[in-house]
Image (cartoon, rainbow, N blue to C red):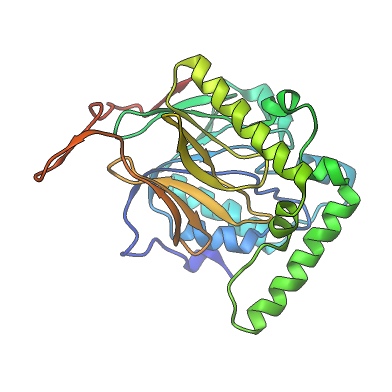
Length: 288
């Protein structure tokens, strides 16, 4: 499938921002074609690449898995930039060497260690990959806990299972996520990761966090703080977007809403909703 034929659909509204992470381009289990198709329908002002977009770990240690799908993703990103989308790269642990370029404006892309995104309703969200919180959780993620060998085989099973589901006309389903949810250790790690992220933004006086890293998409509010994890393109195939009014949506690879968090309001009457803060002027992001 060539992404040259993919264009934003007329039914897709122009978003203020979109967030994707943990694509792992170059690794064997990246769902590159699905991501390329998703990007081909995206119409957005600003796209945050929230780390682990390219898997330099895999590519340096093993044979790189790079084919047409990976090229289609790169082509889709080029087309978005040519259409006026601002690209902001926040490197993660698997593309850590790119952090040496943090603070620079590279051609068609800016690279930041972390950044604050301001939503239309005035919420200030820390955008960071999330590997900074590994030390706070005291042990590594699901991949490290079970070992790369077992994790790769689970992902292989994930591909086989979904190939069969496609033949049966069934929707994508993450075997890897199902197995993680059966692991008490994995669930405790994820809970600690969430608390570490929320503690960080609380100390910074911010309104929430957008991150990736743990391959577990989520969108909710706790104690007045937003926790948004845009998921990944290895297991869950999800992304986070912001609508024109500040609504946050967790989308699947087909663009369907999985979860929604509406704009922040201070009061509601029969005529209108009044935002808690005035809409932020451009630019919509700042260094953290």
